Image (cartoon, rainbow, N blue to C red; front, side, top):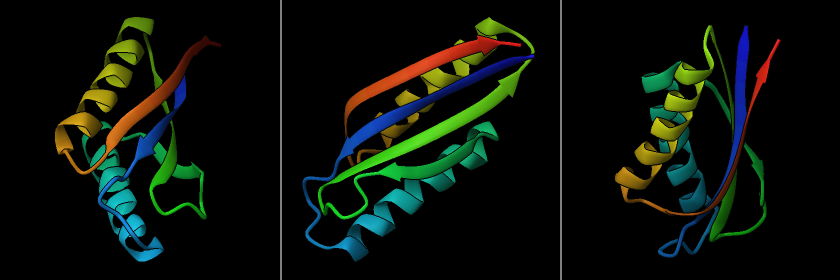
Length: 95
């Protein structure tokens, strides 16, 4: 069993309220869940209007597949165009 997990730091430059941030973060989380069947949640920067941190985890049967899916998650976030990816940390663990 292979577990891939990570965090993605986001910047929301057009946002000026927590309500607007929640809308963007929910859209990103929903799209990741729908496309990759991954566990996703907002994990940090909860009180900041223009920053968000999203954590994700997924389970596969190969390291190559985990790496590919995690790269695709980052690409999807960037392609959505609703936020900027500031930083990301990802790890793969073989159990």
